[in-house]
Image 1 (tube, rainbow, N blue to C red):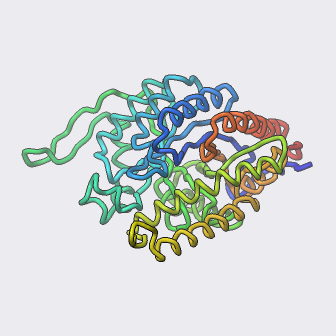
Image 2 (cartoon, rainbow, N blue to C red):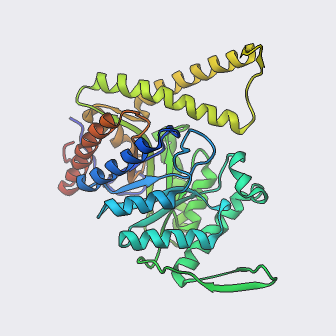
Amino acid sequence: MLRIQDGGGPGGGGRLDFGVFFFAALGDRVRETYGLMLDCARRADALGLAFVSTPERHFHRFGGAFPNPAVSSAAIAAVTERVQIRAGSVVTPLHPTARVVEDFAMVDGLSGGRAAISVGSGWNVNDFVLAPDRYEGRRERMTADVTAIRAAWRDGTWTGPGPLGGDVTLEIFPRPVQPELEIWVTASRSEGTFREAGRLGCNVLTHLENQDPDSLAEKVSVYRAARAEHGWAGPGKITVMMHTYLAEDAGQARATGGAWLRDYLLTAIDLEASAVGAGGRMSGGKPGRDVLAAQGARRKLADLAVNRYLSGNSLIGSVDEAAAVAERVRAAGADEIACLVDFVGDPDQVLASLEHVGALSGRFAAASRDGAGAGV
């Protein structure tokens, strides 16, 4: 029986919360995708999960059902009462600061003060057709955007260049319910991004795509040292996105979840290839040898990734197995796990798995209430 130890990882906390994270690769099955999003949001609310999060993604099947997280957040606000409603990553260099504040102030009003965002600088060059002059310098822009969003949210005014020359100062409406907007910075392998998030006093949204709990613990330490160095109160929050599919039978969960995950990752690999202009040539109406070779390499890469995720870097299995993995992540300093659920393409399977996520969350909540040595 796994037992949660008191104290947690580098942050020193003991609690681990769970939420739902969407990133479907089903861009042409939109009614099913949005129906599942709303059904999961309702159920997450009823199960007592902490948050529901939707992404921003453009011009590809991988995540392309979610080009505007303010719209999806507003829809979730209408069907929930308690969960925090998060958008992430909002690629702030693609958007005017004033518009980001307007959009999520509206979500905040619709939800009674439950809006939050995670920000990112963007990486896919194709996305920047929306703002071609903002690709270069996008990381610096994102950092400046955090400060500007906070100020406009808090003060209700925005100052910037006007169309007739010179700066203008405008009031921003609607006014939000919350006096401050909780902000995460999306971070991956870069220790520097963790440090920058700490300097800014933001939370961190990360994942285990190219790191494990041990390397995560090192970056969490860097993040929390930066927070303390720059005078921010408290340890901040570390939220770790993890592919999640739970069932009573561990073997069945791995077989089902692994098969769906392989197809999902192939779509993600295709996105990365398209972003750098990769691909082969077609000859005579049939795939050329370069295309076939690329396809074979992508299948091998997806298989390797699935094996890695099934070896302790995802919540795919039984609740007992997931509890052991989640405890490793918590011990590394995580405060929350964002359960990416919609890589599984069968809505009934996703909703059934979500019930087990609720049970998993309940175990950690009970352990936190009971104190040191509480059983999981």
